[in-house]
Every structure is written in C-alpha cells, then in structure tokens.
Image 1 (tube, rainbow, N blue to C red):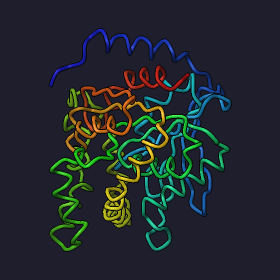
Image 2: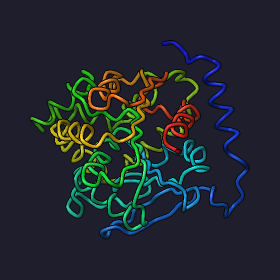
Image 3: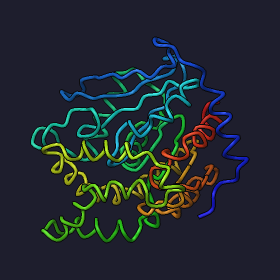
Image 4: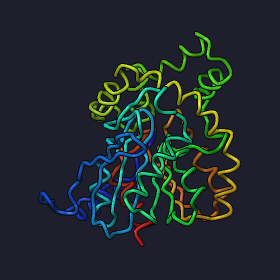
Length: 312
C-alpha cells in the first residue's frame, strides 16, 4: 500500500499544529466532558470550541465511542462548536438492558436527535463514521434544513461498499439467528475482532496506539453488552433496506459533502466512497492511506480537509 505524499502529510500536520494553541483550563477550546439525561438515559458527550461557532456533531462507529475523535476534536475546536456523543450502550453513556431500551438504529437516532435539541443545536455539520452513517442519515433525512454539510468517513450507504466479509457474516445472521450464524457475528465482539477493525488496512499497524481497541474491548465485555450489540447487528439489515431512501435524500437536498475514506478498510470498501458521486456529483472525495478507523493515523489530514470544506 502506498504512503501519502510527504508534502501532503507534512503540510497537513503543520496546519493542524498551527491551529491548536496551548489551551488553558476553562478555555472554550478545552474539551469538556459532559452528561445529559435524554429520555431517561444518561448520555455522555465531549464538547469543545466556542458555543457560538458553527456546530459539528461527530457520530462514532462500532465498536468505539466518542473516544475515537479524541485527536480530531482539538483540531476542529478553533473553528467549530464540537459535540461528540456516545450512543446508549457505548462509551460512557448508560447501557440499559434491551428490555428497558429498544436497541434499533431508529431509536438511537431519536435519542441523538433529542440530545441535539436539548443542547439547542439548530444547524450543524454531521460527521458520520460506520454506525454514525445510518444514525446521521436518519437525522438528516428527517430534518434536512438542519444540516450544513456532511463529512462521511468509512460510513457506507451503497451495496458495492459492503465487503464479502461483511456480507457473509451479517447477511447470514439477518436471515437466521441460529448458533452457527450467531457465532460468526460474535467474532466481531471478541478481542481479535476488535483489534482487526483497527489494524486491517492501516498504513502502519505497528504505530497504532493499542489503547483504542483495548478500551473498546473492555466496554464490549461489560455484563449484558453482548445482547445490546447483537440487537444492533440484527437491526443493521434495516439500514441496507434504506439505502435507496438515503440516496433520494442526497439527490433532493444536495448537502455539501466531504467524503474521506481509509482505502484499506476491509469492512466498507473504497468503492462505497466513490459511489457517493452518483447522487452527489459535486462531492469532494478523498481516499487516504489507512483503515476503517482512519483517524487513528490521519486525524491531522482529515481535520485539514474539514476546515477547508466546511468552516466557511
């Protein structure tokens, strides 16, 4: 796999570092770790940047949390009011059992929408990664007038973006929740599966900080969490069924869109990034060297692209 041009990487890093001054405690640029109660569920979120700046909402993927944005948030906070929540069952948010909370993408999107309304965010850029895609597309399709733009990072919405690995494991589970099919998707909840999502396709796997997948795994291993994740695995079939509706939203509203994609992602293929151009001919699309969790290696480059495309 080829590495990005040295001039691009060096330039992106220089711009990113220049944009981040030393931040004193209490500064609006400092990251704040907050909680809110939404529909009876405690929701944790990270917040940074001036409250009167344009808002950007960072929606994380599986199996991570707002922790995946830890390097990106300070790079955006000089120009944006940044909000990065943890979904119910993820990160530091509450994880009520499935009998007390309906773990579907519809329900999680409703909770996120209620959080943003509670925070008074009326217009925002949405950053979508993995699970953040189906959650964010629900928010955008329901309230297109609220969306200033989309940043799509390894968040699939096209059939050609689904890898053989993803199809073989999950399509079998969607049609049959028997022991064999369930065992295949359970592999994504095990330490090897979690580490694989970070390291496969990465530009330099040996340079990745293992704290990211160790934290994710510790949260996955909490009592009762497997049932939460299996419920969402099963409901993911509803996302694939809505692809056509999301394409119609994109064509109808033509939101300003930046697609940044780890080209080595073995879960959502680079073809899924290129496919957005069918419905958004003016989308800006960048395939970067990296994997599914691109920000682990390319946060400065991604920040530079966001600031250039969305901070106007």
